[in-house]
Amino acid sequence: KTKLGGIYSALMVAYDEDGNINENGTREIIRHNIHKMEVDGLYVGGSTGENFMISTEEKKRILYIAMDEGRGQVKLMAQVGSVNLKEAVELGKYATDLGYDALSAVTPFYYKFDFEEIKNYYNTIIEATGNYMVIYFIPSLTGVNLSLDQFGELFENEKIIGVKFSHGDFFLLERLRKAYPDHLIYAGLDEMMLSAAVLHVDGGIGSTYNVNGIRAKQIYTLAKGGKIKEARELQHTTNDLIEGILANGLYQTIKEIMKTQGVDAGYCRQPTKRLSEEGIIAAKELAEKYL
Ligand code: SI3
Image (cartoon, rainbow, N blue to C red; front, side, top):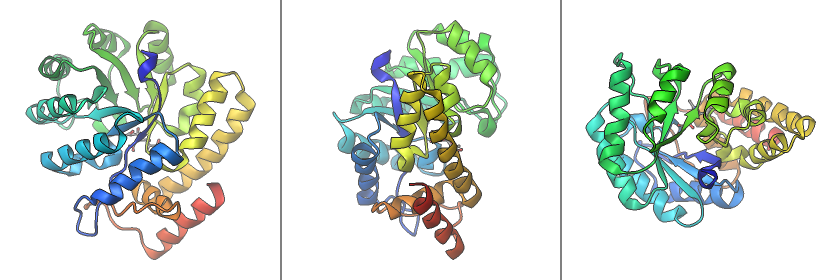
């Protein structure tokens, strides 16, 4: 279990002005995460990769690039979830063949699937791939909530080794921690790293680690070591940064900040809009002030 814990950047992807994958830029982002942010792992194909806006072939290309660039240096987890279960299986097989350490899949969204359908979705991907699975739980975007008992039922499949918990319900997080000490729990909201680390999660997966990875790791390590005051100071600064990022446009601003760190991070894919001139200036100011 501990083998797969740690701080993972939810990998950003550089798109060019026409929304095509900029492979060199994406490779730069990966190297930046490994060598400058010193993350333990990469979470490839998540929300931060703008994954739900791109084609199956593009998803495969990104999975390939991340493996090619990151192999042997960081842990690699592939988010393969899709409302199109056949696509999820295809991506899961592809990532497993490439050697990804584990798969992750968002709870199937948009249609109101019942719990049996959700369970069947996970078991189908696992059966087809034989790989480990981390549930990607993000109710604010999917509208899908899961209870403690439902997590328990999903965990009956021993290949389901944990959950990426992108949710602010700390009661549920604590209940999960107590009930499933051997499962991996990753904090999925970067702004709650300190509080989640105090509850002894096993790591974190987040978008802002692409630019704030060093500080995030410090918060995690300090909090787990009981150095709460120091961790809290760092979380305050982190959350000042995150507040500014969220107010200016989440992924566009992280990319703009990465550019100030010397990375050709490109643009976001439409329908996400471009930053205005003022937005670009605001991103630079955030970088200067907090990084
Ligand atoms: O890319 C991913 O799948 C994630 O890791 C998602 C992660 O939970 C992020 N959530 C979203 C919607 O991007 C967080 O890292 C989030 O950006 C951050 O906490 C700022 O709110």
